[in-house]
Image (cartoon, rainbow, N blue to C red):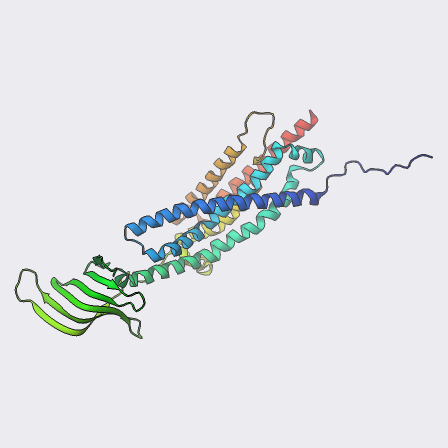
Amino acid sequence: MSKRRTPVARGAGPSPMLYRRTLIREMGLTAGAVLTVLIAIALVILFIRLLGDVARGELANEAVFAFLGFSLLYFLPVLLTIALFAGVLLPLSRMWRDSEMVIWLNAGLSLTQWLRPVLSFALPLSLLILLLTVVINPWMQNKRSEYRQDLRSRAEASVITPGLFAESSAGQRVYYVESLNPLTGTVRNVFMQSRIDGQLGLVVAREGSQSQLPDGSRYLVFKDGRRYEGVPGQLDYRIVQFERYWMRLDPAPSGGKETNIRQLRIGKLFRDDSPQARAELLWRFGVPLSALILAVMAIPLSFVNTRARGSYGLGIALLLYFVYNNLLSLSQAWVAQGKLNPWVGMVAAHLLMLIAAFALFQWRTRQHTGRRRS
């Protein structure tokens, strides 16, 4: 009795879902690891920079972590772009080194068929970057400006520190308090020197506190003290003894509300015909588009020749990323300066990289086809 053989279809390719699930999972893990490392490095660098601002007196102590979050959110689109690029490049390079890619290609899977899993992974991240650059970052810039204005308005009162002489932001007052009750906010044994229009004023009081009226204005209220007024070098000083003395804490001059092109919403940018607005649009839409193009370019760039002692693929990929990023920055600067047409600036860098990606795909495909024939 002869055994019946089940016919096998020749040329049947590998299961498409198998390599897609495997690749997407590995790309997600790699991108997450790279993003974690990049965020950690960025936090350390930004924290050191903010501590320098605090040491120079340009930033209040309590604002360090708030500005750390603002700065990280601003740089997050670039960090996500790098993580996406590395998340596609590194797993594919490992597959080339382990000869997995050669097996898949010899099984009938072409290089262009890797576009589908890569795009399935890269498109959601590119949309997230688009959301950050178009919606979240402008909102964050407005909140950062409002917070900075609030810090400036509170700067006059925040300089009062027990046991230390402190100067106001405008340089018109010097404060010294002996002690501070953190529960009530009352200070004891207060000394204040003010110089307004060349006239010197000294206030010495037993205690003082800060008071805020319903209209939002803040005052320093001194109790049981004396005020000395006069012109330095002259003897006609006036001495005033008081039970309660009110001094208004005027907000620090800020020159009005800060306005920046980065704070404008996308609708206002579209209605604005200025070169600066066009340059900002170029950047907001250019970063997520560059992330998507870089993810596609990572497929041919991931090639590793296992027979050679070394591979220059990662170096070339890093060089292309910096070239791409610099082209975007240069296009934005030229559009803002009116040296480049906005439409040319919006498409030139991306079109150039798309042509480079197409050329790389063609080169790798012909290279693999030649090896199979040989």
